[in-house]
Length: 498
Image (tube, rainbow, N blue to C red; front, side, top):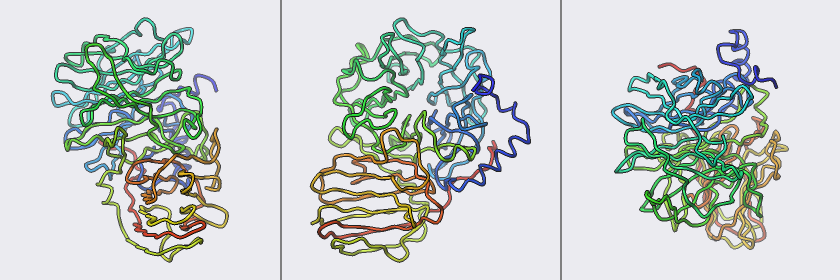
C-alpha cells in the first residue's frame, strides 16, 4: 500500500465512493445493535472519555475510508446514560503540521467549563522518520472544538525513541499530571510523567519507576488512577511472550496495583501484572471518573494487526460496553454499568437440574441478549453452555471442575478470525458455584464470570440463523438457574449531527 492511499483524507473520497461504502456497511449481517461501532471504516482506541455538560463523551480513533489503519481522526459520540449513544461527528481532524498524519490517542479532562482533549499528533519528516507531538484541542459545552495553535510538548526526552504517545491526564491536589506511553532507546517499554499547573505549560518530571524494567518493547495507552486508596496503572505492553494461558493475544492489556504513586520520586510500589480481559478481542482500555464517583472503563473490542470478517464489508471493530471498576483483594473487578438494564426487554427464566446431559429450553434463543446463568450446586466433572448455536456453529463456555479451568472456545463460532494462538482462551478459576453473566450482540460476546472476577471479551461471526442456546453437565449433576432478556437496539448508523 502506498502512502497516498494509506493517508487519504475524507474529503478525497468522491460522493459516489462514500455512497457505495455506506451501502456495503448497511448490508453487513454483523452490524451490532447496542455497541458503539463506526458508521464506515475502522474504529480502534477509545479516547477522551469524560463526563461533561451533563453527558458522557466518548471519542474513538477512526479511519473512515477503509478497514486498515490509515489517517486517524477523532470521532465523537455522546450519551446521557452510557446506554443510548448519539453520533456527534468528527471532533479532531488531522490537518495541522503537528498532526498531519493522524490525531492519535489521548484523553480528556474538564477545566474552566470546557473539555480539554490532550492527544498525540503523528507526523513524519522528509526521511519518513516518526515525529510525535503532544497536542490539545478544547471543546465547549456546545460541542465546538478548537485546537491550540502549537503542541504542548514538542519533543521526546533524551533516552526514548519516537514511540512516545497516548497521554492520559488527571488532576491532583497540587497540579495536573499526565502519563505517556514510551519506548526506551534499548527498545523496552515504559511510561513517563509530565506535570503542569494549568494544562498549558508542561514539565517533564521523569520516568515512572516500576518493577517491570524489561516488560515488552512498548507500553501503549497508560492510564493511572487511584481507587480505594490504592494506585492503579493500566497499560498495554507490546511484545510479551505467551506463558501458559496468559498473554495469548498479539498484544496484551493489563494492570498493576500498589501504593499510590510517589509524586516526588515517581516510585510506584506495586504487585504483579494482571491481564484485564481473558478473551480474544480487547485492547487500549481507557477509564474515567463520572459525577457519581464511579471509575468506568471502555476498551477497543479488537486487536491490532489482525484481519476480521467485516473488513470486506467496509467496516471494522466496535467498543466494549462500559464497565465499573472495583478493587477486590488487590484485583480489579469489572461489572457492566447498571444503566444497561434499560435495554432489557422480554424476560425468560429457567430452573432445572441437569445430569450428564445437554439441554435446550423453549424460548431461550437469540442474537442480541443478556443472560445470567448459574450452576449451583455442582457435583460433576464439568458444566457449561453453548450460545449462537446452529447446524454447524456454536460458541462454547465450559468450566472443568477438577482442573479449575474456565474456557471460551470459538472453534465453530462462524467465520474465522485471524487468531495467532488458537481458537480457545482459558483461565484458572477456583469455585464450585459458577455464575456466567453474558452480553451477546450480533457479532460479539462479553462474559463476566462470578460477578466480574474474570472477563472474556470476544468477537464472533456466526450465521444470522445460529440463535440457539444449550446447557450441559458432564459426568454428574448440577443445579441450573437461567435468566435471559432480549435487548433493545441502542445504536444507530446515522451520521453525526451537532
